[in-house]
Amino acid sequence: MEKELENLKVALMNDLKKATKEADVLNVKSEHLGKKSRIAALLQDLKNMSSDEKRKYGSLINLTKKEMEGMVNDYLVTLENKSNITFDDTIEEDVSIGSLHPVTIVAKEVTDILKRMGFTVVSGREMESEYYNFEALNIPKDHPARDMQDTFYLDNGMLLRTQTSGDQIHSMERLGAPLRICSPGRTFRNEDLDANHENTFFQIEGMVIDKNIAIGNLMYIMQQILREVFRSDVKVRLRPGFFPFTEPSYEMDMSCVICGGKGCPTCKNAGWIELIGCGMVHPNVLKAGGIDPLEYNGFAFGIGLTRLAMMKYKINDIRVLNSGDIRYLENFKIN
Ligand code: DAH
Image (cartoon, rainbow, N blue to C red; front, side, top):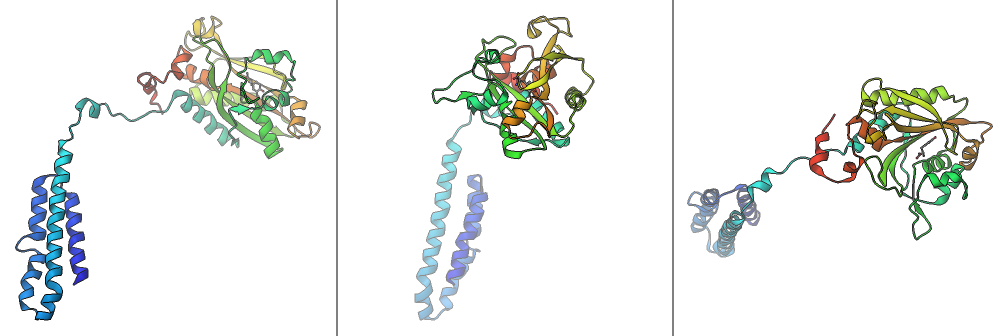
């Protein structure tokens, strides 16, 4: 009997929860507490019970009935309170689903392409030491190459990484040779902001180390990435560059899609946008990573993901990407 009475309360609560308006609650009430309800039948049955049973169950059944009536009344109050809350229609209509940031989209595309080529995706650290950001990359303290990158130095002796290249060293230390990694991430430089410069931007670093690696392998991968991201052959040019951590070094530029190569503020009137720095890994860098340069060689590359996103989506001002202006950014619900 006790169990049955408990079940009646549970059943009532379950039905109440489904009720969304007062009329529903009253229907539930008549079903669970009305003349034809189980609790009413139990009260009727009392008459036929022995006086012992009457004493035992009478008060229990009555108490349960009272509790059930209380539950109905409580629920009516809850419902009334809920209906007093008014909603502002404009807020309801404004709800829209989010979209990925353009840089996130291209970062994912490039990492997916590299993953298919057997690269492992690693992730570095935004707060980095001078050693990993510069020294281990063959950029000693007084090397003029440090001027190329205006660095945010932190009070704790660390810095905000100016490039993802430090992940080359972390990965060699951690994974050894042969190696095939890529590392997308945020980088920082103390730049004056304009249409083409931001103090916070994204790169993806890549590194392949094995025996007998050739420049042709590097070029193939760069072309493949651009072909897949732009879904067509894009006009690129390769020119000699200088990076202390690669020898030889190259820079790959892409014809500016904003002006069609004619020259505009985004490409500083050059008609070309610098997109990729790359080259064959310098033996000193292999040594810093604990790898014997007589046994292994390799290539590395750094792709400007922010610039890649600008070219892919024809964004002519880099500043909008960090602006957080959802109205602008949500235009890129792509793929
Ligand atoms: N770290 C360079 C930069 O930020 C880009 C780069 C150049 C990365 C050559 C590389 C590389 O891995 O081999 O400008």
